[in-house]
Length: 126
Image 1 (tube, rainbow, N blue to C red):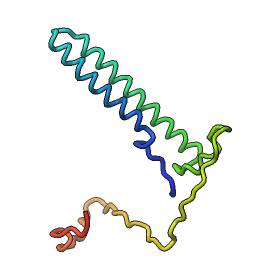
Image 2 (image 1 turned 90 degrees about the horizontal axis):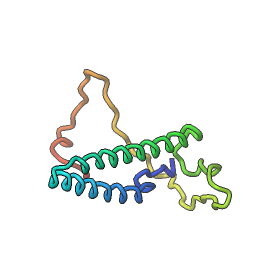
Image 3 (image 1 turned 60 degrees about the horizontal axis):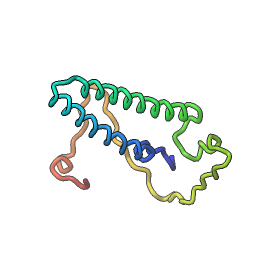
Image 4 (image 1 turned 30 degrees about the vertical axis):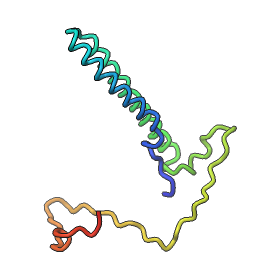
């Protein structure tokens, strides 16, 4: 998979808005506590509900794109772009000699994996 969708990068503007809403929520709760009023807490509940709906819509969009194309590769989504947008061209050449990373495998339940004493006492990399 050459280009996977970076949800965090896609929603960086949304992250800024979420941070501002968290600050506003904190202010509203403090205001409500200071004035002995429930108005601030009620507004915070609405803000949290709105943020949850926003996250659900973003997740549904990504799931629908995956369901339609069967991949999270950006190049496979070329047909979904608007007609006035230029097509994405992949300039980066993949290195065929580069070995693929080795991912850890889960052991079946009840079987303890073999432990390397040197690796448990020393980290090769961080």
